[in-house]
Length: 208
Length: 208
DNA sequence: ACGATTCTACCTTCGTGTAGGTAGATTTCT
DNA sequence: AGAAATCTACCTACACGAAGGTAGAATCGT
Image (cartoon, rainbow over all chains, first blue to last red; front, side):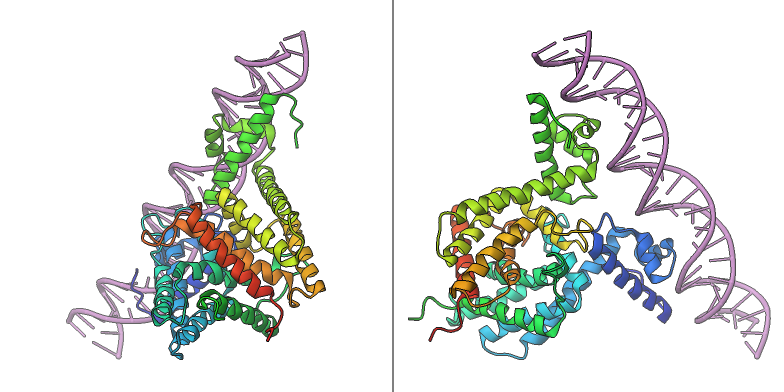
């Protein structure tokens, strides 16, 4: 991590990060060309090296920023609530809102899930922060009896995944099925379904 | 598509397809090396060209086979049932069973969803067959009143996505959270949740 | 023998990484 | 204050490896 002194440098660094996220999201790590990232920023390729020593480091910075930002957004939502179910819905709302606002992040996470052994050593190096949020909220609900006992990762797989698909799939289901993921009506309709499913997933055994 | 006369050739072609699916699944189209595909089959790289004229054509053959096989498996399950909800559950069970048995297919689909414009022109060239299955079953349920009115693609995004994550994520949630997607107990536990969510998703407005 | 199948050898393209240079801004020294 | 020294933020040019595609020769099977 190179320390940047001047304001101009910091702005360039940020611009590189944003451009890189777009390029990596569109075509994935290997296919992504630093040339394209540079072009989007308006500089030459070798100048990227001034801020990020190589392609991998740039990618890591992008991924780290995504999960950190997503974690922050989720925390902000969660803090407004007390009951476990409300916290869980808030957490998932946070994810959904984040991904809709930043679809490039959605695609990068989507690719990450596809990889067999992402970041060899610790696959959760950057995502762990999010997984822990889910564990804390779900385990709390289970402890209070508000939720039935269920593995937190089932919640991730079952309902967390939907938001990713909602965002990534919007233009990929064929011209007559495509939709605008950011359209308020569309979004709220999907959010309703998401809440419905979440409640169903954690609801204690048949009440009556 | 080259016509293969002898049995030996047909076997080689099939072996190439299977090896390619594994390689493409692990690292994606660009990163995948034909060298590795050939090595897995036990032939030299240029021999692949005898069956598939280039990398893209090989990939397309893999993708086409995946969706065709998945469609078949789903149809087999659906045919055993009459009621819309049972058909829908059977369809999703078919997907789940297929993906668990063939995790390489899961990863390839996962990557496909991440792409911005897969197979320029018609993104649903090969997947359309699956999407139509869902539309038929869901629309039927809506028509009979068994289901509440909801867009079939919401079903795909909300519950179809879970099975992909269930398979792809199994070894990527960190060492202490990882599981075996093919383990019968694990699988049935997840299938129960999948059914629960599916029923919740399509259930008509609050009955009482 | 003759087509089917697989090989060896080579060419070409592409993209990253690296070496080294420079204009202009900033700080240091007197 | 103003010249000297240093640093920031880029640049051009090139070397290198990696991977896909191609041409044509060798081998296998019937």
